[in-house]
Length: 88
Image (cartoon, rainbow, N blue to C red; front, side, top):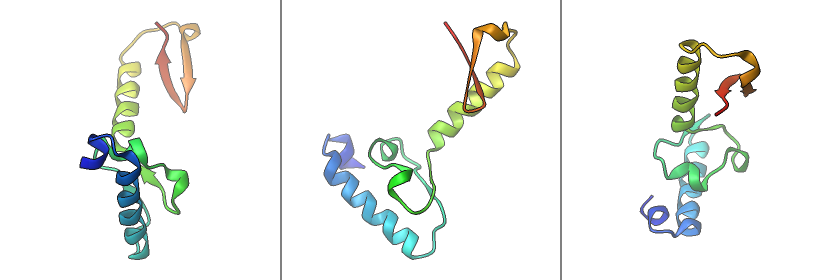
C-alpha cells in the first residue's frame, strides 16, 4: 500500500498480486480490497476469484438510498448497473 501511495504502482501491484495468489492458494473464494489504494492497481478480471471494492459497494448503496428519498422525473434519470444516477 505504501508503494502505491508513493507512486510505485507496478511494485505495489506485484506485492498485492502475490498476496492475493497466496490467499487463493489457501482457499480464499473472494478477496475484499479493504484499502482505497488496492483497487487502484488490482482488477477482478486478473484473478481467479471475485475482488470486492468496499468503496464501490458503499457508493452504490448511498445512491440507492438517495434515489429512494428523491422525487425526480424518470426522464432525468439514467440507470447504470441497476442504480439510478441523477443527471445534473
